[in-house]
Length: 216
Image 1 (cartoon, helix red, strand yellow):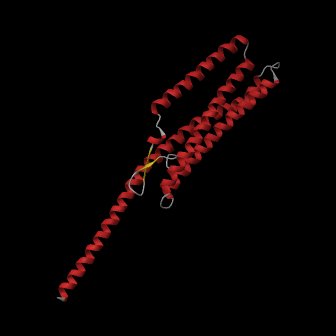
Image 2 (cartoon, rainbow, N blue to C red):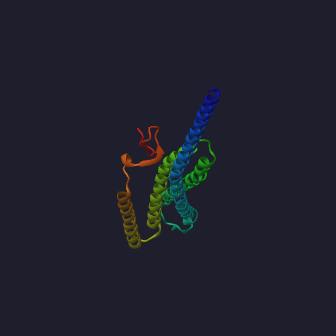
Image 3 (tube, rainbow, N blue to C red):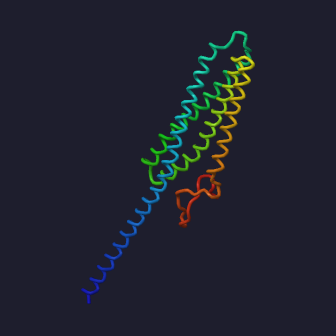
């Protein structure tokens, strides 16, 4: 009887150990699967930051050249107010693009680093942080591009005669209108309403998590 009791006790403890091991393996597999889903979001935001950083660097270089070289080509009889306004707007365009470039570079470097080397929960923190910073960086980049258009218009007003000035201003207004219309068309086509945005995280109750800014 004692031997039977010992055998039953050993079998029970062995079964408990196997169940605990299976539970731990299941939890590990689930964490790996969730991290793989969040990694896709991380790679998406990182790629977007790199694209914005590249274009911001191009526009910032153009604006810097405009600040440094344009003053040498100004006509002697040009308005001091117009020249000052041109340099002011061009400097703003350069500063906005440099700010977007710096933010994009820092986010693309530190975000994946936090997700890769941080403690438990760092992937979630990195993705949520990149999502918020991406909105600010994108708005800064758009403002920089708009300032670049204004700077180019002021340069035309200062440098060109009336006929050429009117022709170039009409051309730039058409280009700006086409750009804004294209942005609106693309935004409407790919717009994702906030209440429909789904994140890669999961809630404690097993429901699907929401994207940044949509949690209640």
